[in-house]
Image (tube, rainbow, N blue to C red; front, side, top):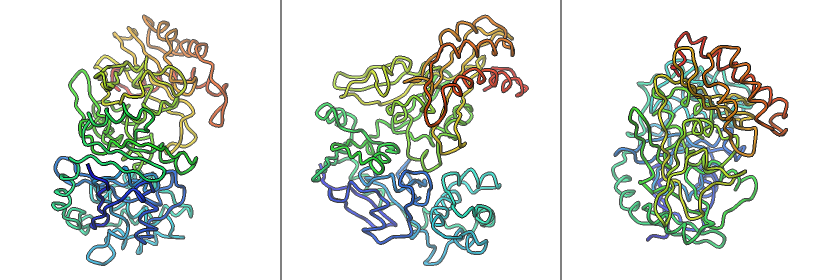
Length: 479
């Protein structure tokens, strides 16, 4: 057992004691290390001004992804390497991305500039953008308040990838990785005046701690927990970080199903399903910015229990199983039975989500997923939907439909599903099904949309399904 966090920042080793462990990474680098290039604006992971590169050991090498340092707290970051804007210098000089930003006048007020540079450096370190759209997609999590996107995009396109010094060369990782390896086998316990933290090195230790501390808040990606901490003053007194529980890693698939570990990020899942389940990959892409997807997890989205969580309708129609582990062992709960009310789940306080088991859509099935929000990216949904249809020719053999944003939980529509069975897949059928769907829900009005608006969406989304499938020019079994 150890009583400190181990963290490397710009190649320098730091031992973090309890007094500093419960502060945002952005505050630590700015206030404790005087690395003020990292800017703080929204403190909720929306704008990307505070972007840093988060490095962890994966498959025997250090991999880096941009994250929002304002909602990554030090207690989440044990055994990782953080690179800030100050750490991206190349032999003491501006690197190729920074030079391109200067030459293309990519900075106006300059407040967002470090975040843009960090994100662009990550893009070139992993997979250099080849088109303007690649650049725009990669920068969706970085906002410019001066509306200076055009010169920023030009700067990214002007960078010569051959001039980029890879992070692996800037920061040789052998020493860091050896240090991490020694520490990850030792569980970590910290106690400050207001907070207690436990970072177990194994699943069994995590389960034991949760049994002894049933009110402990479980943190992995922390993209909701840390926003509540910053914005609502919600500071959990007891925290269980899963950062070093390797049993919760892992992605696996066969022709019938796939398994997603609780620590798998949405970005990793998106890459994994891009060719397997394109509709899911698209929804994950819309889920949030790259910085959010690089931290958030599917298990966290499930555990948050929001009725407008973007991934949940898909899990409903696929009859996914959540694997829970507690003191009595493992048990499996179908997603359709998991939620018992608003923010309530069939899950004991001493249980943890370990894996999610998801059937894979088959060749005779259509799976379509929808998200309606005011903005395309970086916005909470007003309405979500998932539709899974099994066909034989033009006839619908079976249907599964789930809507979000229309009740206290995501809901299935059994009457609409029954109506569709045995009907032809045509516009008239889907229009009538939409009216049945309207009759099955009683949505509320809130800041994201009125009840009437959601009722219209409930009907129209099934017509959209028809046109989406027909306009593809392929059979409905194509996703």
